[in-house]
Image 1 (cartoon, rainbow, N blue to C red):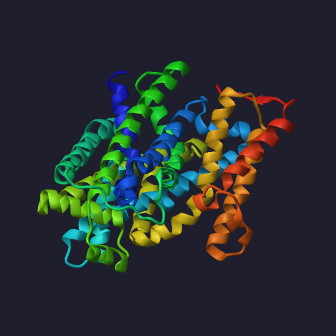
Image 2: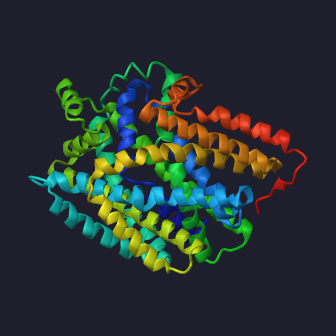
Image 3: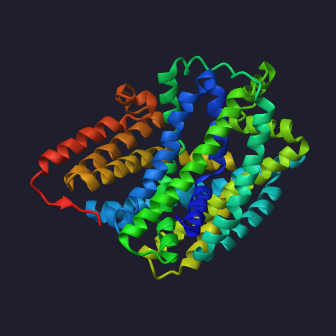
Length: 442
């Protein structure tokens, strides 16, 4: 590994690590209590392992996910990738970073939040996002060598003080409705990591990583794959360390019954509440500022990475419009949506993400299998088609209760009802297509 590998790895960590990644671990830690370690192990497998897998799988084919999906079905490839990029881009994820930054970094300092203060902040926020993303080659160095170290130092400062404050405390009592033993705690953490949706982001970010490595002069297939793996491992180690640290703090920070009632009655986010109070307990008034810096940097690096990924993809499939014009349009569109407020953006995004995520997971797993097992086209088409139907029906049932049989499917309680159908579909595809031409990624 060389300096460039570290820069790309740090950049990848920063664009993965948004505000949601900051508040999930302490929430999990507090809820799991004495069962923290099995719970956080499950969380790290899906919250770190799957995104790492997504980045690596994206480098299996020289055409990235675009080339790999063309070998499955070109029409599906375009529709799926457009849906992915729009969802984690200007329609939901990018606006959410701006709205989240405002609510966690600015609102605590205001007497009364207003539409005007939201607009002024998001105008500045997305202006910086555009400046960072307008030149992708410089973006890698700006994030990897400047913003990421600032983000890591800020988080480590909070973690060290948190450890010092809580080192003598016993774990909180776990939520007995979920965390009753090591096994249940592990799978609950596993599902929580699954719900971070970072595996979807990996599909978009793999383009940035591969482009960044090529920009450093590495173009041979073996070298490209090797550097992608190393950069991904660096990002994964940083993510894993922070997840475990923040989760441990959450598992040792005791809240009074009055505080728990306040969280419940006001529908506050437990992870946000814990982080804010730990920061105040360790750094006093400065703690509020520290949380603001951490959240702003986490959201800013993520929004920049998303603008770059989405703009590069659309410029590739519709080259008549320049990359810079796409970046401007997507940033302005995100600015408008961010001013609708955080709760509105999140509410709109959840059903779409719940459809796309199982499809993305099925794609990652079948692509990885195709690298080692001779796989006919049908063995990828059938499970993806079945999982798409299952995912759509599952969301329709949760939203409108029109497919009650979905509630009785195996693994429904773990939000993984699609998994068995994916496995069965893959096996059927292997059997039916055993004499047909196999998919080869190169």
